[in-house]
Length: 309
Length: 317
Image 1 (cartoon, rainbow over the protein chains, first blue to last red):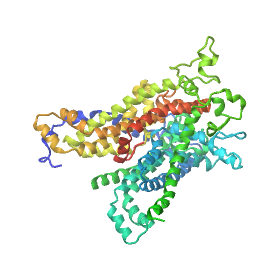
Image 2: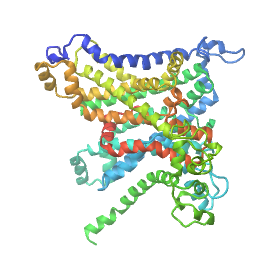
Image 3: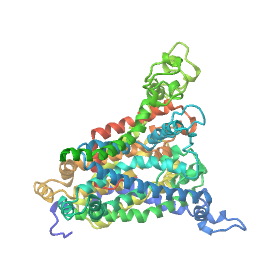
């Protein structure tokens, strides 16, 4: 900014701005910057964080020297399973929340009770993953015999089927059932943002397309979707970051089964159950590396949108 | 058929789909609410959708259909198979009444208070500090301002997991594990990047004339901040406060790591009931609802700000 044109109140020397930013600066340095650097350091150390990770190498086994923890993260079967599960989460939950969110936003745009319908879909955003875990744990409840108290198995047995152990049948069903809970919680978020974008599409353009003889379907795919594409991209990238960090649902509903673990729950287990801070830190660093490009893109795009507004 | 009738008929599928989706969305929560109000003997025998039907079991006819006993038991941490009043409030309390009460460490009552004690300061601190910083980034001139702002905003991408281990170690050294102060500071650190970003966008877009004329009237930056920037930024601050409040209230991971069982909050208490104690559905459903009361009130009373907050920026997490 040009100094001559800046208001006089902005020119206060050095001390004044410092006083304003010092609390935030101190806390961020201590609670975000320092730990991030420290975690990167710990990821090259052993379980106790004392010696180099290279000391864990054993004769005759593959060894990556100081990168030994990363060898575990990138080659261990439990970790590969966690990456696979997280990938499944990303594919299903991001498409589920964005697709359903867009569908609902488009549909409710045409009815008078739009605010009410939106509030209903949005409601799960306000509650905790833990609360959602209980709500859905009850939906998925399974008894091997007798009358079912979970509504899904009541329907299955009512139709003459055998009760299904939704949350413990691997390798896909248990994961998908957990992901459904995530979709239930986050669709409202996507719907809200996409709905605002839809309302920003000028009606003249839509009318012009209709006058030219395009049907609703064509108008939607050829006019509306391209116009709100920047918003759809922001929603998708935000959801990818959120899903990469997913923890609570799996922790509460997964019951510790290895088959449903994701990156964040593996990291928690290594640190706070197995007390292996080296491996746990390496998992965290990998998570950071996965998030940084997507998160960076997100912030950039968002700022560009702000400028356009 | 008239055009109007055709249009109404044609829109029926639309209404069916929307209302169907809404029912699908509400049904799980509705089932939980009904279950939490049924006597526990019924909960484990019949589905919640039978609560309004006639009962087949003749013994069950003596019991009321709906009761608040589950809520009482969850609040005081009573896990026995009678009602809390029968088992514990008479002359000779049962052995499993030991350790129950409104302040019981295994009850939701105590956890509720802990949640409030954690959440309120952990909401006020980051919003206040962020407002200070946002003012400086908007209306004070200093070298490296843009760069520093970019760095702080960039910190949004650091996942919480990245910082748990070093801070846990430092807290262990200084005895901050299990203390409220430790959690407040941690949540403040994590709330700040997004909060600064959101408030900077808002405070920075306030009209500059306002600040210029305040200066001509002899106002110091402090006056300008407290008398102008803060009041004018109320909508943004409201959105941010709701987000931070719900984020901390609903958080499990930070509470699990830094507070654990010594100072259980609501989310911890429930997850503990699920994972280690296998508490019955009558307690879990009531406990879940107790934890949801505050978020639901916040949601219904301030939905407007909530939606605005979502639109103002991508949500952190």
